[in-house]
Amino acid sequence: MCDTTPTIDAPAPHIVELPERQAAVVRIEGTTAELPALMGEAFELTSKASEASGAEFTGEPFARYHAFGARISAEAGFPFRGTLQQTERVYASTLPGGRAVTTTHTGSYDNLDVAWDRGQAFIQEQGLLQSGTPWECYLTGPDEPGPPITEIYWPVR
Image (cartoon, helix red, strand yellow):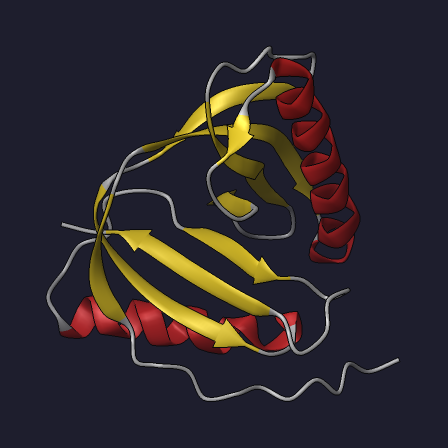
């Protein structure tokens, strides 16, 4: 079945200053086809660990990508405030603060590559250098009304 969710034009990529944030994450690795299930499991595990710890979410779910290719390696979870009791799979990580380029994609996840290309072109055009691992924040998901909204961040210098 083909996703017919339209892609909506997004604002141009731009530079933002972000605060450093702690995050509860699960390391995931798999193919592109496996990512939805892996992310769903990671979000569920981090939610349960955070709730059991009394930690409070301070942002939207995200995935930070460490490797792309035949297999994708990422951390998926939520930024939080408080104390996290780590589990066998859930551990504390950090979303970096500082300068970042961001762009927003509204529409099917199948078309996210357009937003990635747009952000990476902006980084080159501005003479910036990527200084860390990029991540996606999922403002809305595929099970919510309307098209999914995803923000992408690239730490830069």
